[in-house]
Structures are given as C-alpha cells and as structure tokens.
Length: 338
Ligand SMILES: *Cc1c(COP(=O)(O)O)cnc(C)c1O
Image (cartoon, rainbow, N blue to C red; front, side, top):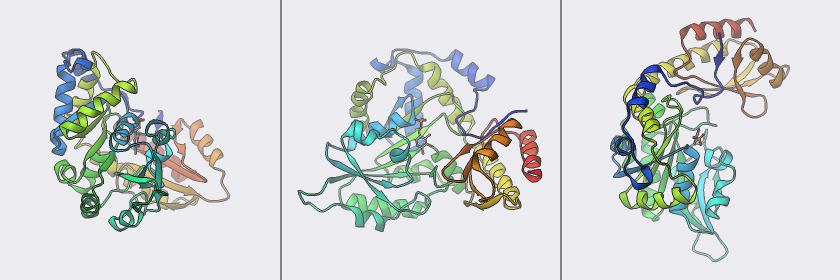
C-alpha cells in the first residue's frame, strides 16, 4: 500500500472526473470560445463575488499574472517571507515584473494591517514604489494556517486608504473556507485579485483560475498570452476543475480531520521535537536532533510512505482525497512503532 503525502497535488482524477472531462464541450479558448472554460471561469468568479476569471495552467502563472498586472518596473510587492510568490516561483517577481519584494516577518506566513502600514514606502526617489500587497491563505510554509477574516478586512482597509491593490494567493483558499466555515464572497469583497488552484486539495489534474474585475481579467488575457499560457480546446481539463468545484470542496473537512488525527499521533512520538498547529490539511513537524531528516524520509520511503523535507529537520505531510482510512491506519502504526 503506497502512501504519498508529499503534497495534495499528487491525486489522480477519479473515474467520474474523467467522465466529465471526456464529455465536455470544447472550443478555442484564445478566441474565448470554449464553453467549458467559460463556465469554469464564471463559476469560480461567482463563488468569490468577482466579475470575471481567467483559466491558467498553474497557480504560479495566475500569481505571476496578477503581480505583473498590478506592478510596473521598479515596484515593490509587500508579502510575507514565507510566501510562495517569493520562495517558490523561481524569482518570477524580478523576472516577469522587474520588481522587488518587501518581506514581512509574519506569524506563520500571516501579517497584520499594521505590518502593511509600516512597510509602505514613502514617496521618495530613493525608494521602490510600493505597488501591491499579497497575502497567502492558507499559508503553505506556515503549516496550512488560515488568516482571520477580520485581519483581511483591516489589511484591505489599509490598502484602500493607500490606493494599493490586494492580491490573494489562494492556492488553498477552499481549505481555509471549510476550516473557518466562511463564504468565498466574504473574502472576495476585500480582494482585488484572487488566484485559486484546482489541482491541490480539490483533486483536478491541472489548472488555476485568476479572479478579479472585468478590467483586470481583460488585461490578464494579454499577459497570459505573453507568458505562453494561451490555450486552445482546453474544455476537457476545465471540466475537471468544474467537477472539483462541485464535488470536492465540502469533503476537504475529511482531509482536515485526518491531519488533526495524525497530529495527535505525532505529538506522542519521541522523534518529534515540535509541531506547528494543524488547522487544515498540512502538517509540519520538526525532528529531534538525534535523528537525521534524510534517514527519516528514507526509512518511510522503504515502507512506501512518501513525505518531503521542508527546511532544516522539518518534515511536511499533506493530506488529500487519495489518502484514505486504510492508509491512515498504516501510517499511524508506522509512526507509533518508529
Ligand atoms: C502550489 C501553490 C501555488 C501554485 O503552484 P503551481 O504548482 O504553480 O500550481 C501557489 N501558491 C501556493 C501557496 C501553493 O501552495
């Protein structure tokens, strides 16, 4: 029995999802003529109360398009030092937008409105031009923790006051909505652009959608084309995303419950030095000094259990829809006996 907890991206499309993909009507999406893509973009936009959406191959692309959209060369993007846009997008902010970052020292990847206020650059020719604030919810490197909606409201108020756009890297926003029992529209009204991923916890094989105003998304189509992200008859893969939005959101609670159960097991394990609080489907824990990270991962691998290193002595497990009770039982046994 193979157990793959390296990421929630490892899921395979189910039979029902594949059927939906097979049956989807398609057209040329660069001409905005693919009915399934249009349905996916509109459905996603409606969930968050935004005007429009644009379907892209990856969350990196939707984030990078948003950053390009809101900045000009010489800009500065305010984001957390743990953020995906800074750590895991190949330096794309510099490469694609000729801009730099102002890194905030948040709490598990989350910063406050006050932090934002203090980091906005003055109108001084020496300084880069603060052009965008970007938050990540849930925070990946922060161990899947969620923003407090009230703090997002406050950050949005600061942004509005200072005339700064606010972007959400919402690769796992549905995990946050389920964990906090909140609605997409409650978040969407505070955000200018939102990137959502269909290929993480939602279980689609590919795809992200960038959401925003009609004007933003119109501009985004041009940037997507420049980046080589214009796609043709992609209704088949959009159908997987639509299927995921309809069928795989509410079930995220199961992933969260399994992550919490695993956390309770890990807390009793002598090889665990510490564990970040578990709010959603990500578990991040540190190993005791007497055990080597590489040895730990290798030993699990020999037992057909995959996980990833997440920094010095740090391990990440991510639960997802292909991680079921029988695998949970095996993993629990292995951890207890380790
Ligand atoms: C996975 C992820 C993305 C996007 O990644 P892609 O692999 O490019 O789809 C963006 N932000 C966060 C926080 C992520 O975890």
